[in-house]
Image (cartoon, rainbow, N blue to C red; front, side):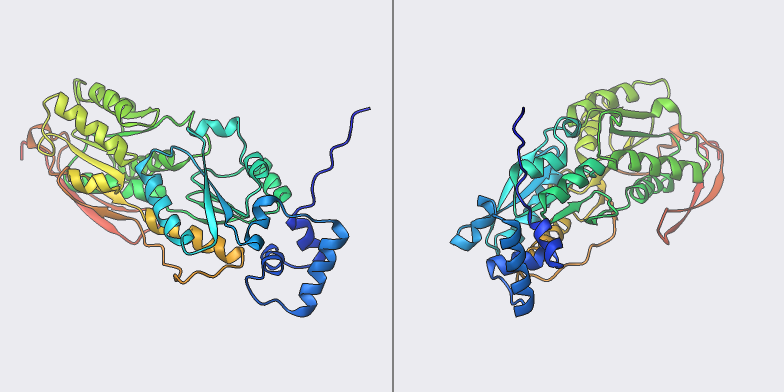
Length: 372
C-alpha cells in the first residue's frame, strides 16, 4: 500500500476557516498592521485547530529576515522585461521582501512548467507574473498554494492585473504610417503558434489588420510575417520582405527589438530609412530613443511599480510610494518614419476616415498617386 502524502495546510485554508482575507492572516502572523482583537483571536484559533505551519520563506519576516516575492517572467533578457523589473524593484527595496526571479526562457516553457506548479514549488509570500495569462489549472495551483498573485500584462477575471490595449496599439502604429501616405505596409511579429500564453504580438497584428481594413487598404499575405522572437529572426524575414518584387514601403514591428532587426535588414539591402522605408516599433525601450526609432510607448516601468505596490498591500505592508496612474499608449514619432516615396505610391487619390479601436482619436487621410 502506498503511503499517503498529506499536503501542508495553507494560509488560504486558515483564512477561509477564520472567515477573513489572506492579507488579514498575514497581518496577524507578522504584526505588520493593527488587527481587531476578536479577529486576531479567530485567526490564531484557526491556525491552532488546522495545525498551520508557515513555510521557511513565510517565517522569515518574524525572525527579522527578508521574505520572498516570486516573480515569473518570459524572456528575461528582453529590455521590456528589464524596465518592468526596474519599476518593481524600486518598490520592493522599500519593503522587507526579497525578489526571487524565475525565467521561463521562452513562453512555450509554460507547457512544461505550469505557473501553479512553480508557485507551489517555491512557496513564496507573494507572486507577480509578467505577460503569462494563467489557465484554470494555474488558478487551482494558486488557490492551493494560498498566496496572493498579481499579474502584469496578462488578462484575468480572477486576479489583479494591469493590461494595455495591444489591438489599439497596433491600430495607432499603422494609422501613423497610413497618414504619411503608405499603402504597402508589412507587419513583423512573434510566431504565434509557439507563443504560448503571450498574446501581445497577435493582438498588435490584429490592430494592424484592423487599421488597414478601416482605411480600405489590402494586406497582402506575404506582408504578414511571424517568426520566433528576436532581432536576428526579424532581420532575416525583413530582408526577404525587402527583396520582393513589390516590397513594402513601411513596416509595423510588434516590438522595438524586432524593429531593430528590420532597420538592420534595410541597411544591409542599401535601403534608406525613412526616405525609402518607414519603420514603427512597440514598447519604447531605452535603445529606441538612442536609435531614433518611431514607436508606440507603453508604461513598462510604471506597470512594474503598480504590481509591486498592489502585492505589498495584499501582504499587509504599506510602502511610502503612492499608486501611480497607468498612462495610455502613446505614439512617439522620431526619425524612422516619413512620407511614402512618391515613386512607390500605389493607389489613386483616396480619402478615408479611420477611428482607432477603443480611442477617441480620428485621423483623416488623403492619398495621392504619383501621376497627380
